[in-house]
Image 1 (cartoon, helix red, strand yellow):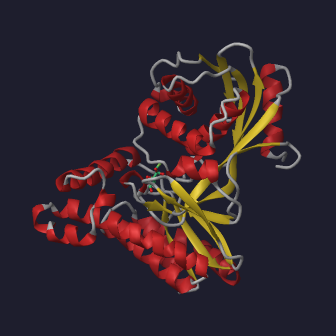
Image 2 (image 1 turned 60 degrees about the horizontal axis):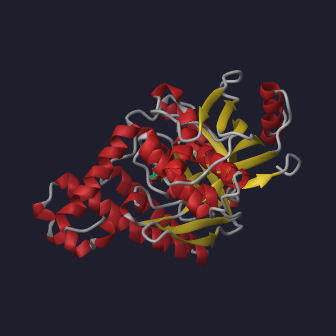
Length: 388
Ligand code: GAF
């Protein structure tokens, strides 16, 4: 089968009857540790992965956008810059693009129209940020074609604004930032308060394995927003902007004044921030036993305090950790309620991990898992068809 870049060009010709000028790509992501900390101004440690959204574009002389996706070939979506209208829930993918141009127009930025065709191989609905990859590939294309000279961070912030204000999802900045700023063979330690980011090398001795539980992610939006509200109400209790400005000692002393749920939600965030910083140091130092412990603690905290795991995900984590011991780490990754598990394991154990999943997961849960052997890749860029 042709590669995604070739498919994007082909779809462009089929749809618009002419060739595209340029191709832009943005990756999905996996978060190694630091879950539900971004919107609490905390720390996250994601890596961009070698699964991408690719967009072929041709500049237009007016302010119209026309877009087609390989998921719905033949269906051309059209809107004018600044006239996006209201978000239409049944319009799924196009809302992310309209959200981006709506955020640009609200910020007073100009944009030239584009014709575009979109293809991708980021698994949909798996918690690997296919929507951020779409927003950032599009945002990078618009930024370049309209010669706006926004930094990748500014593109990420614009995409997050679009998703928050137009699409109506109260997500943090992690997914957009890593898709825009990812570095090959590195994770990024992001401080979500000042948006400073530091690349952290992933040791060559480790395999990056993502396992899709293939559990349908039901309730994810409502539960996500609920977690966010619970965190914000604890920050309000302390009279601070965010949980970043509460420490564990303060939380302990307020335990009786908080509900048990509020206390546990905040405890997850505070301890997860500490684990994320420690995991970044452990990864840099090649201290895999320490990383293993921190990832296990993170998973337990998501399961018991934040309550965002599901039994199938817990099963996957248990069976993988039995194989890897302290020669790697494993935990749920992403927003939760299904989705994927991430494992960073000694290369020598990769086959054993895959075998354990194949022989035990469906037997224990009745569901087949999908395994992706990944690598940490670079962030969004303009690309040539040949070098993809
Ligand atoms: C989703 C959100 F989009 C991110 O901002 C982040 O909060 C994540 O869930 C949980 O860590 O991917």
